[in-house]
Image (cartoon, rainbow, N blue to C red):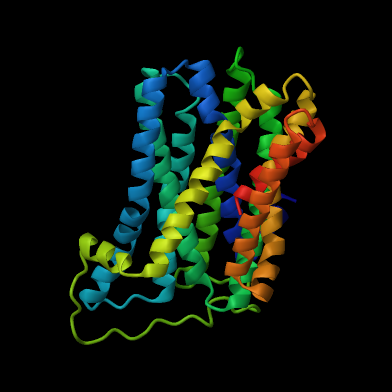
Length: 368
């Protein structure tokens, strides 16, 4: 029986293994977003000045590490290209998977650093945020880059994205369970819960990346030969002439010349701020707006649905984007959120059921 299960795991489709990485990421990240602010404010009693200093430094670091780590990651391949070393697609995939196998468990370990008081609250808040975001960026960066390395056709990318959304939705179920063990007065149960989640995530990253690496190593056999996931991929031949090495400053200058990129960054700035503000303060919203009017199970349901709905929506919006275009879909989503805000403002906080629907729906639409 055990051998049969092991054989089944070993022959899982590549799309399933790739999507499972989203599960091991979201199962931790959603809990982090939901409770780290409440933990430091209500449990560790961080002072207001230290809190805002930590958030400001985190905001700056979060803005810088995305292009910095992306440049450092791609520079590995650029340097190989300049030294006339031929890099095949499987080599690129193996490098990405190697980075995921290292940073995935470290990401899980950095997640645990939030839930045990080991330093002054202000110092711990700053270190934990920057450390966690660094490993999160490395995992997210290599996972997203792996999508382009695994498939070039729109159909295959849609298929991989579908599995990512599906597994992310499953990973968001951890929010349901977290609300039942969350207790500011007795933190032990929540800590044990976080240790279990981190162990699952670290083990999952290790096993999934090992299985994927086995398929792309010389002599490895893919379980999806019939789908030919990598047969469409190719790498252009290396030019004879040596290209000039691109520095980080030149890389940023090239990006700044693209007007559409600048507009996208501005829109993404507002969207990311909105997303993190809602998710970080969601427990406080529930506590002050609805705690005396809804049951614990209802609160758990609202938390869970607000994190699961975005991923379920993404499965539907993929088809809408193909039909109407990404720009049109995003524009109407912003209009919808604005309309919902106006309706809730006019209705007031006394409409309990409307407020519950608004909180769950509005927060979920923020993540799209």
